[in-house]
Image (cartoon, rainbow, N blue to C red):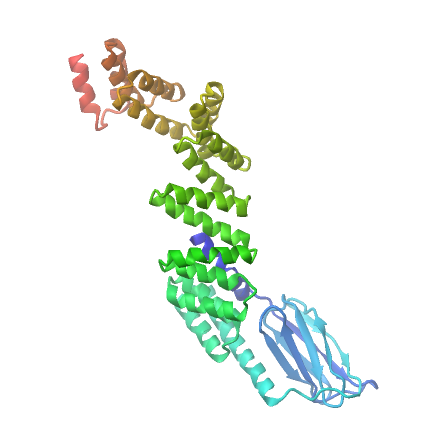
Amino acid sequence: MKKLLAASLLLLATAAHASPGRVTGLILDPAGEPIEGAQVTVRAREIQMVRSATSDKKGRYSLTLADATRTFDISIVKEGYAPIEEPINPVVGGMLRQNFVLQPGGGSAAPPPEELARIDSRNEAAKIYNAGAQAFEAGDLAGAAAKFREAVEVEPDLPLAWAALARVELERKEWESARLAALEVRRLTPNEPLGLRMHYDALWGGGRRGEAEALLEELVAAEDLESASIRLYNIGVEAVKVQDWAKAKASFQRTVELDPNLHLAYLTLSQIQVNQGEYAEALANAERFLATSPDDPRGLQVVFNAYRGLGETEKADAAYAQLSAAAPDMVADALMVEGRANFNNGNVAAATGVFERILQGNPDHPKAHYMLGLCYASGGNLASAKSHLSRFLELAPDDPEAELARQMLASL
């Protein structure tokens, strides 16, 4: 979930590093004379951030924007004049000078007092929000949560503050608080998937896995396929932990259907398939994974095991050579498990072949020498048994099985 939480904190990080800018200029009439008392309002399009000012007797206005990277609209209203509303592009870290000429006519009156109060409340909430972002940047999660909660108390319809609160509460593992904040984000921005993602994460983190999984189809319907696929992958991982292979396979298969670029899902799916004897399917998915990570030993190991399962000896040998070069220890460990299983099941000939193969890649592998000693002793080849047991003791004299090896040598 760390990845998911890191991704969900992106907007907070952006806000904390926002670049300010200023907008200033003159409000004039057609004769070039200043207009006093014009209401100038700047609104951000993406979030509910509003700044307002009134032109002075020289027609001057000036506004400071906390984050000039966003898209804004400016409106100028003065009774007796036609209003103006148009987009503006502030200068990040600088000043935009822009004058406006108001034409006489049936213009709108200044905003009513209740609207001005609304603007003031949003400005106050924005200030508190910025303080919360600074607290978050400083690592004070509790302080950040308190500030974001204060911001939404001042302005309950500010989705940015609710989203920030949800993110911080997710980071703090305050799952119920995060869930409630996420529901507010969903209420205020019903067509955006952000609140839905955070709602899912709060349910999942709080152990309400069934409810969380029920939201996945809503993410898919919202065309937030990347987020849905990541969460599906995590469902598969949890299923692997409890050995629910059917659910794991279904989750990983749906993951790559939604997002073919989530290549790790091909690997985990192929690992399950090769263990269940679905060698052709495992090979296909391992090769999809290796297309982007050609030297990853995990994918190479699946290819090796899949070719062996399919009985394609030459291709298995080629895959083994590639895997041995990339991760000799991984090859040896995997083969040791296989060799011991063969030996314990009485298939001494197969076990002998496996341990000899280990020594081909790593002539000084202590446990391969030990197991070969047991294999040869079991088959009556005492000279070879002594040779391998002696070499085992040279390489690992303090191994837990060293004493047994000494006893065997004494009796051979």
